[in-house]
Length: 389
Image (tube, rainbow, N blue to C red; front, top):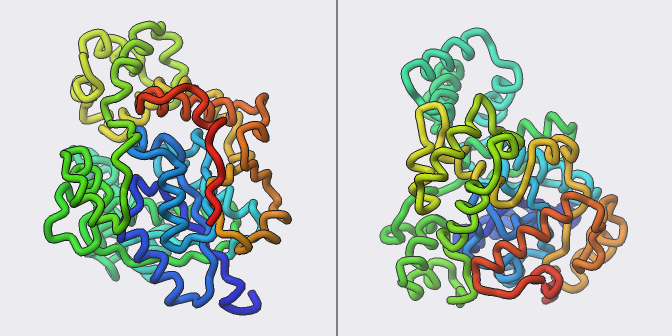
């Protein structure tokens, strides 16, 4: 790089919803790299939790632009609703292939001095690490907790690092993706403060998205807006239970053979899924019936999202990397030259999508399902316009 003014920092995000903590990340990036331009690669209608986002992508993109982002792109849905490893791989691959992003910024509870040795150990696990991991799993720990225990046991320089925390888990996935893809992006972690999964806003200087959603869904719109720092729209929204009946119908109508083609539906899980769907009346009840020590809540939630979206393991295997990124919003004049030179297609309108591309077809389904849950007409993606500030 010729200097900080040329820094273009990518952030892989969901902004469900965008809040003060996200704005703080922008500020911290520009403290380290004055004049940096910020590219947000955001999830669309569905998130990594396997749930519909509360607000539409256009609403979340505008909030990011108004807070200081220069460009907001949408990560194709096939990578938004994956486990942490593949979510990170899809996002890092896309930002790298744009050809103009120089840094990757992400939240973490620790700095690179702790994260890099941990990422190296995960890439090349030692016998001691594997033994510690097996021992923790045998005691009944979740995989994330067991991995954290093993990392702490094998990295004595940082025995108290909270490796099981969501930000550190994702940070390690980003670092491993950078190495795996031989990406030139420079990692730029931002220290995460506050409780990522705190369910209440009280006492939080930097709110969690979980707490903001809880306040919003609980009817405390004023508190949610205060935590976000802007006029968070009251509608339209897709509530967490809005698509429950659609999901249950799909699961009940499909054969076990069809369910077996869902991503990560292995070891006969399709039979359990079929039986539990017949008994459950809601998505949450279904998850409660499905959950076992072997199948974690997060994995099952994504599995249900895959069923809702008609995703298959074959689709994901055939498309290991994004083939495009949709433009959701941009700051006029900020990155015009870079956009013209992009090595990856950047469609701004639905009409510019390749209808023969299964990833594009999945995006269209995702938008229409979100619209159904929000009480909107079909064709939401076709009506969506790029936000330009």
